[in-house]
Figure (tube, rainbow, N blue to C red):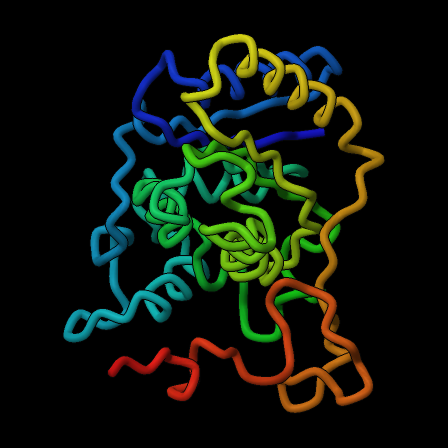
Length: 258
C-alpha cells in the first residue's frame, strides 16, 4: 500500500509530530510505502493563483478552475503543484495530519487542497462522490484540538465534532470519491499532560493497526437523491443532511428583551 501523509505543523517537537512518527512506525513496519508532504518544512506556498501554472489558457482573465483543467490536460502545472499532484495520485491512503485551528485546518493545509485537488486531476465534471477520481482509495484525518472532548460532544459548547469536520470529510474528501475513514481526534492537547498524551499516541497506533477493518463514514449516494436533494422517503443519515428549520435561523427564536 502507498500512503501519503500531508503534515501541517510548524513545530518539529509538537504532539502532531509525534502522531506523524506513530503513523510512520505503523505503516513502514508493515512494509508499506510512505511519503510525507511536510508543508511547513517544504515552505509550501498556500496561495492558489497564476503561479500555479507555467502557461495559461487565458492571459487576460484568470479562472482557477479553467487554468487547472488546462494545466491538467497539458502538463503545465508549476513544479511544486506537479510534485504534490503526483504524490496524491499515487497514494492508496491519504492522511491529513494537522492541529485544528478555528474549527478547521491551518491555512497552509487548505492552500495545499486548493492547489493540489485540481480540476481535471483530482475531480472533473461527472467525476465526484461515488463516481470520483479516488473511488476505491481511502482517506482520513488525524487531528488535535485544544478544547476537551466534552466541548465537541453533540450537545457541547463547540458543537458536534462530526458536524465540525463535515466540510472536510464531505466537501474535500468524500466529494472526490474517497472512502473516508473515521478520524483520529486527540482532544485537549497540550493541556492533558504527558501521560495522557502518551495514551493518545497508543490509541492512534492501535487505530492505524486496524485501519483495514474499520468501518468508513457514510455518505448518501446519487440514487438516494432527486434534484440534488434527498428523496422524501430517505431518512437523513449524515451530519450534513437534515430536514426542518434550524431554530437559530428563525427570528422568533431570538430571546426578546424589554
